[in-house]
Image (cartoon, rainbow over all chains, first blue to last red):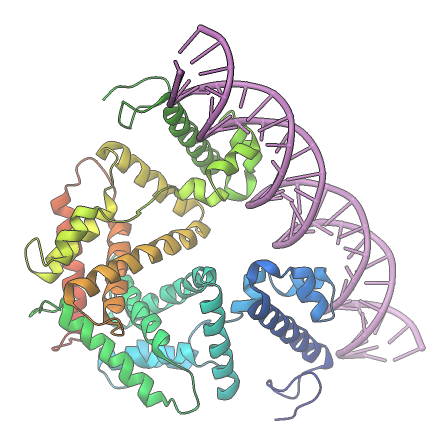
Length: 217
Length: 217
DNA sequence: CCAATTGTTGCAGACCATGCAAACTTTCTC
DNA sequence: GAGAAAGTTTGCATGGTCTGCAACAATTGG
């Protein structure tokens, strides 16, 4: 990978135009995050963010629809298409919960390199603590993921379109994921296996709480 | 209950001032809902809503912080205090899931009379279908409920403050509730017992999906 | 180097939302 | 009841968000 003044993350053989766009986007995002961590969501205007990133206010809105968008960024879009296909066709292990966890994890780690990813996650966590209103927007994004996940589950289990249980399972799985994320620190020492174990424990706890032999905890 | 030109729902022995306020609030809410169902969220301004309710634009904002607020209204606030206390102290049946369902149901039915309640719910459903953006706000409201619920669960189970499993259980319970609400029609023929059965079935399904003897569906 | 494409910018304008002070209405007190 | 106290409504001014448009600038491809 090659680094220059503008870009350090993407593929190299992109045109100048594309690289500049990525750079501007990142500059805006960074400006938004740092200013708002410093002064709070209400005390920073789009105008100031744009100025910090050396572009016009108007340009800000060419990149992000709202101020929140600049902060929450391009969080978990769709899962990796390959992972999705494997899940739908019953893989990789054949165990429903284990395979579900695999999919959930791919929502967390996207295409960027791992270090950047983790740093972004830590920043996002800080932002949420500073400005709880942002949780709102985050939940909305998760809702989109939930829909995708439900579709995948329906496909894997062969549920009929009227059957809405896949929606239920997807919704609760997203609860598990949200919950697990809250407990993560996104530090260097956190291994994927640890994350998997945590998610597994959460599912197990739900199974025990709601399952056939429901205890009182 | 006594009805007059302004108010038909609340207690009767309220002062004139209070009755007028309730009436204005309802007028604004009704105006917002009907205009937006008719023309869409983007094509109705606060000015128009206020005009329809015969108050000034400024007054609108004395009642609601945002346009969305007028639509989603005073949805599930806190659960009935009495129900909460009973749940916390291990009642009413002693079975965790059953008692949880009881609490969830009280979130759905508040102090208003049942017919109004159901009509409001139907309207809200229509609004959501017409304007999916509103789901966002609804999720945010549910998030508050989730926190309350988690606190109640923690209290009942005696979990220590660092134990975050109550949060997990509350989150998934809210998923169940959201899911169940989607399947309800809020018609006159829907009995509380039916609702309870549906929620129970959903919990059971989760228990089976994630439980010890996890099947592949 | 020219032409097509794409990105940036400023401007005008609509709308949302809040603070403030004046006018008005209800309630309280005597 | 009359008048003071408390609470509500309203207009006005202001600042901020966001969009459409048209001119301008930069990149790309031949």
